[in-house]
Picture 1 (cartoon, rainbow, N blue to C red):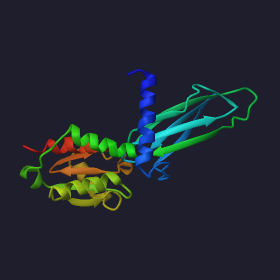
Picture 2 (picture 1 turned 180 degrees about the vertical axis):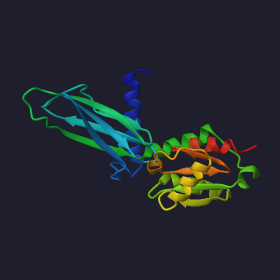
Picture 3 (picture 1 turned 30 degrees about the horizontal axis):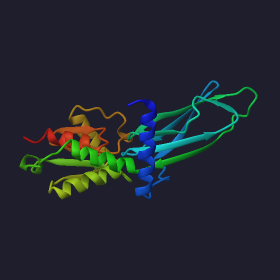
Picture 4 (picture 1 turned 90 degrees about the vertical axis):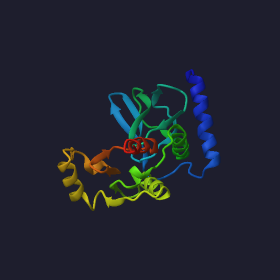
Length: 216
């Protein structure tokens, strides 16, 4: 697929999502526009601190910069990631002002979850239903809620702990398992199945792949 077709597809996906959802221009604070100055260049990034993906739309209007591209930018943003959107090159003798339109759409996450379900089917058998499972959750974590709903729907027993309130317990567990405790303050979700601990999971597909390992 060439670049023009890719752009058209993303535009179609984005505006289709806007039509079917009220989540357009979501102001959750989870996806923000970030500036990074590099000499005369101003790099614009979308930073996503959420556990689900989004689609962002960026249009810049300026007389003070030479645009690297005259087109608006439309890109999918992966969970817990920072994605480069645009490079602006400042013109000599200008103040460096610009106006922008930045729209965040959440529907892409729902599409991704549906795609995950189609790509990987899993049968929850007795081996998993009798396993000792602990999930460490955080506040305002939609992926945590998705996981708990998945377990409840399939009658999988689990113990829930909180990443901040139960940090001492988690730290001891990680050390006892020979796991690193580095950057645990940045985690939003951790799952322990028997003696195995999994960090960095952000999509339903990744979760299902982990669960599949524990099914005989």
